[in-house]
Length: 348
Image (tube, rainbow, N blue to C red; front, top):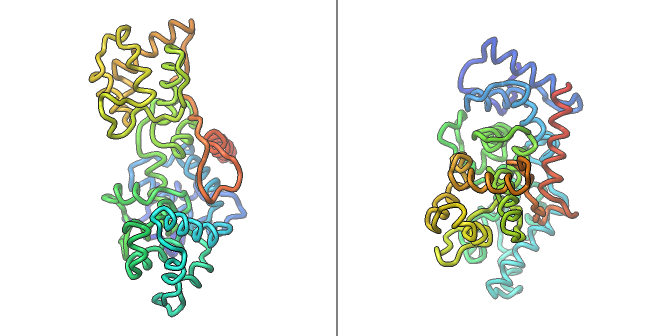
């Protein structure tokens, strides 16, 4: 009875699973519909990924769900038709596609007999929009041109997890996939599973959960990397964006990004040449960077300069940029909001 209609655990529930589900359900706010169903999906996600169903993990997942969707598997997005049409017009303008051609394409009949324009005017959720884009890309020549065969909806579900992340981490997905991993993300079970993987499925050097929540928004190890940037900035006097991006992707060795260039200015003190620095920075999306000579030596110099031990994790200074956001928000705002919910959950 604890299993919701969308949930089919890969193994029969036993006493341990029952206890975990009961604890999860107890920590979900009483206003939430189908608390038992949510608990079943969360417990299955933790068990399938061999993550302990302890209060810390449970509350971390619940806090992100509450922040990202308010316990809605497929949350509605305010003003989504206008946002979606704006994205189409932006892409058309960038490709010099006349507005008349766009309007003509949207007048074509969709699979349900309505025009694509009519369907676009009635989308309410990212799932609705994703399905519409898939059909436009597959059936309308203009769709291929505007979207280059790639669906613009790149996040979704109860935990607003990345579609690309889900597709790359679906090898142990415990449920039957009836259509695609993209579709699974928009189900409660899929959104919870892949969101849990993104949040908890990697080791960190953090001592505070708020930095993991910041990473959920800014990218894995962004908080550690931002602290490294802060240390480099202190040593070099170079103003650096504390965004967690240490290496510009595919940058030629003779055209480094700002952070890499600042680190290279410390080469004589570090005893590392530019290629050794590049190799170390290439580890910045993994735990190994924390144990690299570059990381250790930069902090040794920075700690000595400061006369104290500097933080090894800093919330990245990133302004959230999405057409769904109608006010100025930051990664710090997100991380602190989730952390507050996390602490409230632990007290329940």
